[in-house]
Length: 470
Ligand code: ZN
Image 1 (spheres, protein in one colour):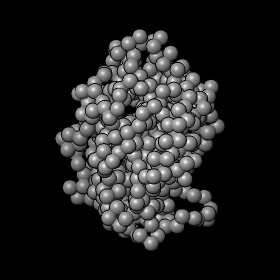
Image 2 (tube, protein in one colour):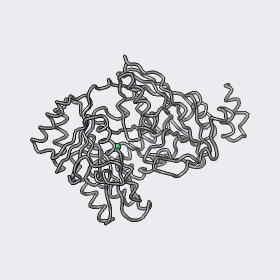
Image 3 (cartoon, rainbow, N blue to C red):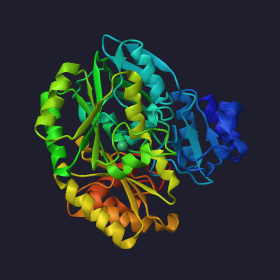
Image 4 (cartoon, helix red, strand yellow):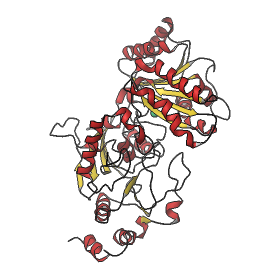
């Protein structure tokens, strides 16, 4: 019997927090004000509520923690950077939080195999910058890069700004180490691009929102750092021209197109009008704006493609970033979604649908919203190349109790076009009532079977995504 298990037996009558402190040391277990002084989420000022926050330093300590929690039937919620948007990391006062913040080492960067081995508490931006020193690139990129963690990105299968070229997190993970609900460590740290030896178990945990296991380490696939990068903002006067512009860029730029970020007029105005910090790089009067980036495209190639788009009448204005600072300024516009907090209440969405359905769908959502909330603003943007739209809906009245009514306007029209209520944010608690719009009863039942098989006591992130009982 291990020392920790002996200790646990002696403390059988003691409370779990005391036992955790004895097992891991005082500095590894936060309680009281050290818990409540933490903010629950990026947009939520509410404090974290939990019995304790455990901060393991190794996979072995995560495993010991889970063995104990399993024995005590103790609910556990894993925490990364807490930048999620669907209450996936929400806690209750009786929960124990396992925060991966001290597992923040980059263990190896291999420029021959083009891989990085990282612990799950590493901040995304830190990883991006470290691999850049080796002339390599980790392509995942999103607005929360400065706070979100590799483990959180994996748990939520984060998407972001370059999905059109490199895919989502799922496509960048080669191997994973995961601790299951009963403390079992499944180390599947594959370093190869190809490995068809049986089930690809890592995919089960990617995007499972901490409900099937706690990710502790990962092997991630890197790319060569591109020599050139073109970033530009264009204006388009009709929605119907956007798919043609996307097709022209994708075919002419030889597969280097990495971002096609669409902004509706009202979103562009929101992020280029004071008190927003950014000034408008072109007129605020066009119906649509697209932030385009091509990683690895020669600038002459981009210029001839742009000329072609102009000749075909697909664009009506364009600004090309001439320096890294200008490039960052264009991205700062797109990333400034926080401006919507000027309008309260507001509700954030990340729906997914076929590009060919987009015009009619947006029109229908706006029709329903206007009918119900005459003063509504629906700031709209999206990763159009991925079929992913974001809405920042401000009803212009009421409070957060309007959430369900706003959600109904956005989600109900997705049912008949087989769209998804979540393109990239996940389900968490927030979208749980709407899961059945995007997943059949049979699909949800298979999810339940997987959850019961891996976490029979239902202690990992309980109540998130779906209920265990139908
Ligand atoms: Zn997004």
